[in-house]
Image (cartoon, rainbow, N blue to C red; front, side, top):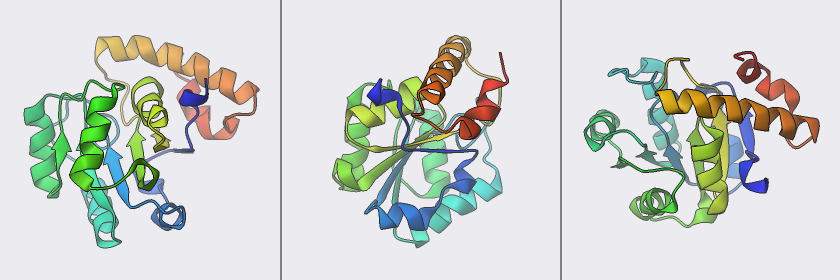
Length: 178
Protein backbone atom coordinates (compact mmCIF):
# COMPACT_ATOMS: atom_id res chain seq x y z
CA UNK A 1 0.00 0.00 0.00
CA UNK A 2 2.91 2.38 0.63
CA UNK A 3 3.51 2.52 -3.12
CA UNK A 4 0.05 4.01 -3.64
CA UNK A 5 0.46 7.00 -1.35
CA UNK A 6 1.21 10.14 -3.36
CA UNK A 7 3.65 12.63 -1.85
CA UNK A 8 1.39 15.48 -2.97
CA UNK A 9 -2.13 15.79 -4.33
CA UNK A 10 -3.13 18.91 -6.25
CA UNK A 11 -6.13 19.79 -8.41
CA UNK A 12 -4.02 20.70 -11.42
CA UNK A 13 -0.48 20.86 -12.73
CA UNK A 14 -0.93 24.62 -12.45
CA UNK A 15 -1.17 24.25 -8.65
CA UNK A 16 2.20 22.55 -8.24
CA UNK A 17 4.50 24.68 -6.10
CA UNK A 18 7.79 24.65 -7.99
CA UNK A 19 9.66 26.46 -5.21
CA UNK A 20 8.59 23.79 -2.71
CA UNK A 21 9.86 21.09 -5.07
CA UNK A 22 13.20 22.88 -5.36
CA UNK A 23 13.36 23.11 -1.56
CA UNK A 24 13.08 19.30 -1.53
CA UNK A 25 16.08 19.06 -3.84
CA UNK A 26 14.02 18.08 -6.88
CA UNK A 27 15.42 19.11 -10.25
CA UNK A 28 13.49 17.01 -12.76
CA UNK A 29 9.88 16.38 -13.68
CA UNK A 30 8.52 13.34 -15.51
CA UNK A 31 5.05 14.39 -16.63
CA UNK A 32 2.18 12.33 -18.00
CA UNK A 33 0.21 13.69 -20.98
CA UNK A 34 -3.35 12.40 -21.16
CA UNK A 35 -5.65 13.87 -18.52
CA UNK A 36 -2.65 15.49 -16.85
CA UNK A 37 -1.57 18.07 -19.47
CA UNK A 38 -4.36 17.61 -22.02
CA UNK A 39 -7.77 15.93 -21.92
CA UNK A 40 -7.53 12.32 -23.12
CA UNK A 41 -7.23 12.14 -26.90
CA UNK A 42 -7.15 15.90 -27.35
CA UNK A 43 -4.54 17.03 -29.90
CA UNK A 44 -4.03 20.49 -28.37
CA UNK A 45 -2.65 21.70 -25.06
CA UNK A 46 -4.13 24.58 -23.10
CA UNK A 47 -1.77 27.56 -23.27
CA UNK A 48 -1.72 27.93 -19.47
CA UNK A 49 -0.27 24.43 -19.13
CA UNK A 50 2.31 25.05 -21.87
CA UNK A 51 3.32 28.26 -20.05
CA UNK A 52 3.62 26.31 -16.79
CA UNK A 53 6.08 23.93 -18.47
CA UNK A 54 8.05 26.94 -19.75
CA UNK A 55 8.06 28.41 -16.24
CA UNK A 56 9.33 25.14 -14.78
CA UNK A 57 12.13 25.08 -17.34
CA UNK A 58 12.98 28.75 -16.68
CA UNK A 59 13.20 27.97 -12.95
CA UNK A 60 15.81 25.31 -13.66
CA UNK A 61 13.74 22.14 -13.86
CA UNK A 62 14.50 19.54 -16.47
CA UNK A 63 11.26 18.18 -17.89
CA UNK A 64 10.43 15.00 -19.79
CA UNK A 65 7.08 13.59 -20.89
CA UNK A 66 6.44 9.96 -19.93
CA UNK A 67 3.20 8.67 -21.37
CA UNK A 68 1.44 5.45 -22.24
CA UNK A 69 0.24 7.22 -25.40
CA UNK A 70 1.57 6.22 -28.78
CA UNK A 71 5.05 7.55 -29.55
CA UNK A 72 3.74 9.84 -32.31
CA UNK A 73 1.35 11.59 -29.90
CA UNK A 74 3.99 11.83 -27.20
CA UNK A 75 6.58 13.18 -29.62
CA UNK A 76 4.25 15.85 -31.01
CA UNK A 77 3.76 17.33 -27.53
CA UNK A 78 7.46 16.98 -26.75
CA UNK A 79 8.35 18.95 -29.88
CA UNK A 80 5.76 21.60 -29.03
CA UNK A 81 7.28 22.01 -25.56
CA UNK A 82 10.93 21.56 -26.55
CA UNK A 83 11.51 18.67 -24.16
CA UNK A 84 12.36 14.95 -24.42
CA UNK A 85 9.72 12.25 -24.18
CA UNK A 86 9.15 8.56 -23.65
CA UNK A 87 6.07 7.21 -25.43
CA UNK A 88 4.29 3.89 -25.11
CA UNK A 89 5.70 3.84 -21.59
CA UNK A 90 3.67 0.89 -20.29
CA UNK A 91 3.47 2.53 -16.88
CA UNK A 92 3.68 1.43 -14.12
CA UNK A 93 6.57 -0.67 -15.42
CA UNK A 94 9.87 0.90 -14.41
CA UNK A 95 11.54 0.95 -17.85
CA UNK A 96 10.01 4.24 -18.99
CA UNK A 97 10.59 6.02 -15.69
CA UNK A 98 14.23 4.93 -15.78
CA UNK A 99 14.52 6.08 -19.41
CA UNK A 100 13.02 9.46 -18.44
CA UNK A 101 15.55 9.86 -15.62
CA UNK A 102 18.32 8.90 -18.04
CA UNK A 103 17.16 11.54 -20.54
CA UNK A 104 17.22 14.12 -17.74
CA UNK A 105 20.55 12.87 -16.39
CA UNK A 106 19.16 12.83 -12.84
CA UNK A 107 18.96 10.22 -10.06
CA UNK A 108 15.66 9.14 -8.52
CA UNK A 109 16.05 11.36 -5.46
CA UNK A 110 15.96 14.46 -7.65
CA UNK A 111 12.94 13.58 -9.81
CA UNK A 112 9.19 14.00 -9.37
CA UNK A 113 6.49 12.25 -11.39
CA UNK A 114 3.34 14.21 -12.20
CA UNK A 115 0.28 12.27 -13.30
CA UNK A 116 -3.43 11.69 -12.89
CA UNK A 117 -3.51 7.96 -12.12
CA UNK A 118 -2.79 6.22 -8.86
CA UNK A 119 -2.05 2.78 -10.32
CA UNK A 120 0.21 3.93 -13.15
CA UNK A 121 1.86 7.25 -12.28
CA UNK A 122 2.00 7.10 -8.48
CA UNK A 123 2.65 3.36 -8.19
CA UNK A 124 5.37 3.47 -10.84
CA UNK A 125 7.02 6.49 -9.25
CA UNK A 126 6.97 5.24 -5.68
CA UNK A 127 8.43 1.84 -6.60
CA UNK A 128 11.52 3.65 -7.88
CA UNK A 129 11.79 6.13 -5.01
CA UNK A 130 10.54 9.09 -7.05
CA UNK A 131 8.47 11.91 -5.59
CA UNK A 132 4.87 11.36 -6.76
CA UNK A 133 2.40 14.17 -7.46
CA UNK A 134 -1.19 13.15 -8.19
CA UNK A 135 -3.33 15.65 -10.10
CA UNK A 136 -7.05 15.53 -10.81
CA UNK A 137 -7.82 14.22 -14.29
CA UNK A 138 -8.71 16.95 -16.79
CA UNK A 139 -11.63 14.98 -18.23
CA UNK A 140 -13.91 12.06 -17.48
CA UNK A 141 -13.53 10.91 -21.09
CA UNK A 142 -10.96 8.11 -21.01
CA UNK A 143 -9.89 4.80 -22.44
CA UNK A 144 -12.32 2.06 -21.33
CA UNK A 145 -9.80 0.19 -19.19
CA UNK A 146 -8.87 3.45 -17.44
CA UNK A 147 -12.53 4.01 -16.53
CA UNK A 148 -12.58 0.64 -14.78
CA UNK A 149 -9.33 1.43 -12.98
CA UNK A 150 -10.76 4.78 -11.82
CA UNK A 151 -13.36 2.91 -9.75
CA UNK A 152 -10.61 0.92 -8.04
CA UNK A 153 -8.59 4.10 -7.63
CA UNK A 154 -11.47 5.86 -5.84
CA UNK A 155 -11.87 2.90 -3.48
CA UNK A 156 -8.17 2.94 -2.69
CA UNK A 157 -8.12 6.70 -2.12
CA UNK A 158 -11.07 6.40 0.27
CA UNK A 159 -9.19 3.67 2.16
CA UNK A 160 -6.04 5.80 2.31
CA UNK A 161 -8.06 8.77 3.56
CA UNK A 162 -9.77 6.67 6.27
CA UNK A 163 -6.35 5.59 7.48
CA UNK A 164 -5.09 9.18 7.48
CA UNK A 165 -2.52 8.47 4.77
CA UNK A 166 -3.89 11.11 2.39
CA UNK A 167 -5.80 14.28 3.13
CA UNK A 168 -9.51 13.63 2.56
CA UNK A 169 -10.08 17.21 1.41
CA UNK A 170 -7.44 16.88 -1.32
CA UNK A 171 -9.21 13.91 -2.91
CA UNK A 172 -12.79 15.11 -2.52
CA UNK A 173 -13.21 16.12 -6.17
CA UNK A 174 -11.97 12.70 -7.33
CA UNK A 175 -14.49 10.79 -5.23
CA UNK A 176 -17.70 12.30 -6.55
CA UNK A 177 -17.66 10.31 -9.80
CA UNK A 178 -19.14 6.99 -8.61
